[in-house]
Length: 194
Image 1 (tube, one colour):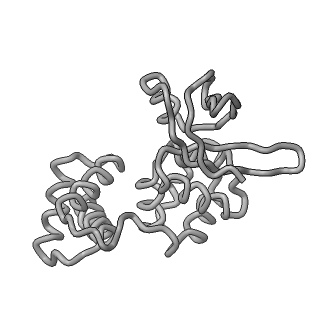
Image 2: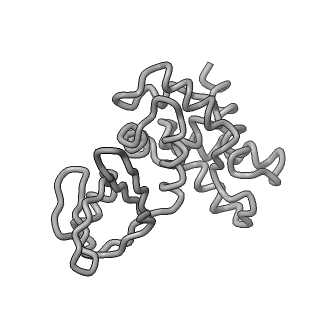
Image 3: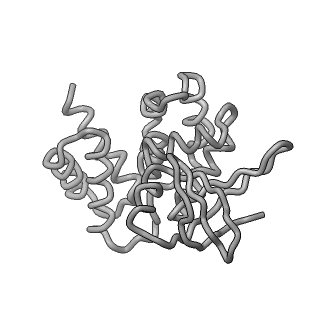
């Protein structure tokens, strides 16, 4: 099994890179983010998901180990194949997937092309309790705070509102994990919208 590759970009086409690793070219499927980065970085170190089928072996590459783990988790959901998992990651990112699962928001998954209502519900049900939105041992509350604000902005809230919601939660109690902070801030924002 191929778990990691480091090499230079030999060729590229939408969603795929050919990495030259010691004279061997590996075709790797990548997210749009990695593809765009290939124009600015001549060498890549990618975490690899190696999918073996009867008729093919397919490689999927990620810059961060967290992305690989989320991809693998998505692939465990009934009805979600590697291509759908890549689409979900490309559309929502790791933080978006974690938020959608943490808040049971299957609508976020339905917004991804190729993911239907049943599959969206299955993703939430299957991954609940399995994904974490941040390191619980994270001692940097400001870093955690900023991550949650960024996540809320990614969900469509204005930064000013997102920051105010996070601050309001922190005033009540600062000893919260990143996922708990996100849930509480989302709850504040949702009740404010009604």
